[in-house]
Length: 245
Image 1 (tube, rainbow, N blue to C red):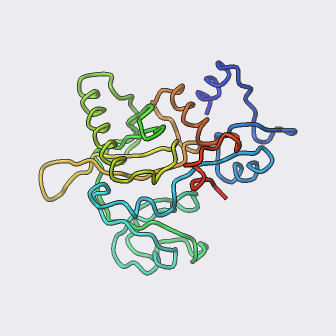
Image 2: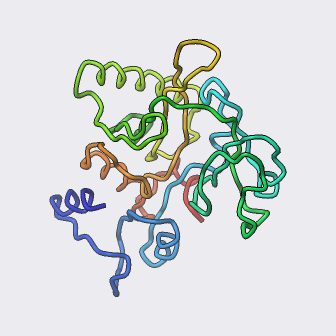
């Protein structure tokens, strides 16, 4: 947040905290969904986000695992290890649950969830996409442990960046306009237990205005955030289906 605020200030944009009284639009937003939703009407914000079922609707060619949508009630019925996560809000920890009894009893049974096979990502990367192209990217984890690193700083990094770009091009060609024009896409090197090789796969898609930049270029991240959470009058026709209601 501090890096993006500094970049915005460098561009001559005033930066204000959500708690500051007297906020007025037009404005852009970077922060949590609860405060963003509360301020959206007053500030005239259009908050872009991927659909809840986007990941589950992708062909397994791009996910590398079975993913389905369901509810907390469905998740409570699972009897084998399953990765369970909320599609958007962080209402409970996204994690591998041995069975449904491990979920908190306080959760609303009707709350939507994503359920997927348990897989191992050797490395995970955060991509900030603008109009289907990678604006900037960063590695953020290795075998599930936080390990941010900028891409393209050495020969290996450039090779990985090229592979990721090719994967995103294939995904964009196959999935069409199923994501907002400004969005975060997490992808990973999926370890295939059946053979000694890795494959690229989508981890998930997220709101750019509620995503950590890690080691990505803050200036390019801000470009994506400004599109993803800006004045409603600037909303592009193709993004109307992706606005938070």
